[in-house]
Length: 607
Image 1 (cartoon, rainbow, N blue to C red):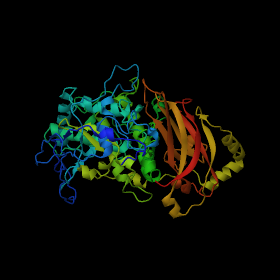
Image 2: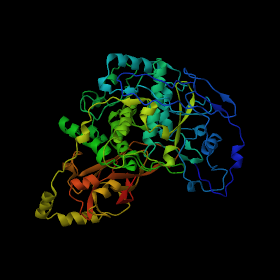
Image 3: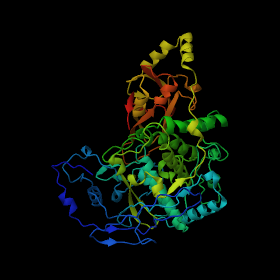
Image 4: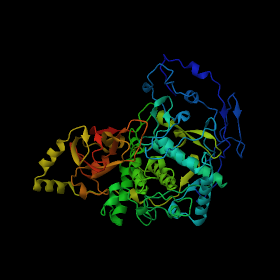
């Protein structure tokens, strides 16, 4: 519910009649490949029809698959073209928090490079939106398979489905062109926020990242299944966290004669080349940039461990920072979105292209079928995250997250409004992921040196005082044009285990500002100055900040965001829990001189 100030009258907004539509899409599916435990059956929901003009096309079971009858006040205001009425209500819209939503009718030119041919990312506008309703519970859930384990029959089925999707007219909302455009529209500023025409909607770098991409894959999958008349069809996931065949581009996507192939990929990263989840663009020109295979695998496993286990124990850290209607975009990415999600994009994109198209830049990423397998694994990580002990690994409960909405076309060309709250349980959407080994769950990082050895080395070489002086000389705002170290005080020392479970100690690198046209990356180290000797598998390596270009043409060229790194486990492993301060070292990997930082601090979060 939206709390509107008492002095504001909204009566006039409810005088317009509405037409409510129902979808004809199927809501039942059968098992695709691997049987799961039966889901508890429940009675199907009944639809309460509004006393308005209705168009109800039943599915094969005689029941509509999307519910469009239950409208709350906010939905009606959205349908009338404005939330709160930023243009009609005499109130500061920023004073009223509300769920973010795209203004579908105002979709316009995307923010893309000026040297790219004119691109239209907006979908066709066939009809008024209908509200999504969860499908009826399935006895057996569809299982999305790991791409390295699929058989020839599955490959033939996927190739057939995508081949048909590619053959559809570009204006068909089910076509591959339109599916690719979805990412461009939501991620490159084609939409503004409902009620805030001067603010772009951005689904990255915030708590919208996981639910948006889950819905995106859900409808992509449903469309593919419908094109081959197979409601059991499930898309595969790229198992890049598994060294057993998953840390290379899956062979299903490398056949040059297949509709699953995209020629715009990095030619140096084709199988059997192992993926580097700590990838930096400079590694392409550095013969020593990529570690040997065993070290690379160890680094990859530890990177995922840090993102999902030790560095993602609370929803704000893993899912991303809150982003409500009226807020500026890019409040801060979650741990997995930042790394390894973004490095996988960069590693896969074609370095021969001016902007690393396709996967290496937002506007074109959806043009590569590998994108959907990559995000399948990202989506899988959301499921795994909730099962790991320790911390508060639960989804947000704030209405601004649960009620945030997006619009997608389904397999019957119906425009469907979906909400985050209906995406939190993939089983309720009818699917799970194939179970495979998860070796990174036990790949805890290791200290490069013991605390005693580091102290002895500092004393013997007399570098302790010099190191402290260097660290205290840094001033904010800080231009990151070379390695820099900063002493950061800790507000609390020696916390109990219960306190650690209730609050996570977080290193906050605040006010990260750079030109959104440029890709940037910097690494973060704690209590070790010799970053050249530290590997991602070491405890002293706290994490990285990575950004794909958000290239613009119509808005402010600067992006301002924040990086939060959970460090409770890191400090335990470094035996630094009783230290009054830590030394934080930042090392630019590319984009030197393009980044300014306003502040570095430590805070505690409980959500």
